[in-house]
Length: 354
Ligand SMILES: O=c1[nH]cnc2c1ncn2[C@@H]1O[C@H](CO)[C@@H](O)[C@H]1O
Ligand SMILES: [Zn+2]
Image (cartoon, rainbow, N blue to C red):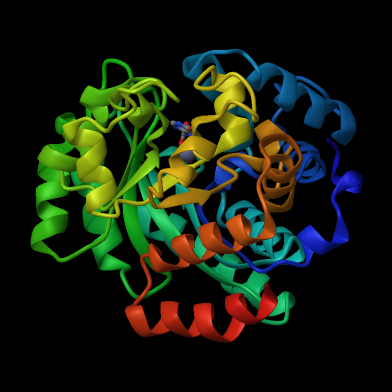
């Protein structure tokens, strides 16, 4: 489904987005321009349309590792303060135009140091871009950053400290991302224990390319407040429609504690974490009343938007507008924003929009 096929009534709905990667959401035309300006000559295509197609096709690999290789080209043009500010500003504008009223956008500061910026300069450039994008959009959107540490690297404590340093100044929390198999969350236990002592918020990518042990570690060892993806929690639920369709201890814990699942349907089709939108576990988890949220993950690699994800669920998995309202309120309740600010967005913007 292309962008022009999105129904206006879905586009108009207010949306809350918790899981979107800054380096996975650039406009193809911006990548082409930034590459030309900076002399980056390794782009796999040099016009915007072919480049957009290349990202979608190369990411459609069936493996998270191969999917992640495509980020080389977006990260390459996000190495100066001007580049970061522009990308962040356009991100906020694109989300606002799609009806997103609240977004947490994540990126890994450690991947943006090749042009000589410090970690602090990276965060400040992205923050400046988000503020600019909010303003250009007439303040119809609030954007907060989540700082990600790469799970194969060894910078998580430093990045966690950076998230605490900029807390309340545009940064709402912390995350780890990258290849999941072979890099369990407990590898970064020091960072998570530090964040807990600092009363700071964090989510963990878990249960996407690896199963229950990753989810279990993220929650029970590391103390994750939310799960990035978390789709594999269905491995702890009995077979659909069979008499033993019941929750295992971990799935029950996740549901009982209302742990938010940041689910990203289209992204999961590309990495092989799900077969189709119709069969994506998100619908079953919604029906079982887990705290499900709908997200984009990487708009560039999946050629998607919040409206597109919502419309796919309506068209291919039987979702109703009430379901969309429910997941939107779920997301807003689960945001890493102070309680009073979350409530104001729910009461003043989301509820009147449905
Ligand atoms: O779905 C995902 N699973 C795991 N890691 C991801 C996913 N999408 C993006 N990234 C990784 O997060 C970094 C910071 O934004 C990206 O550079 C990419 O390597
Ligand atoms: Zn992600």
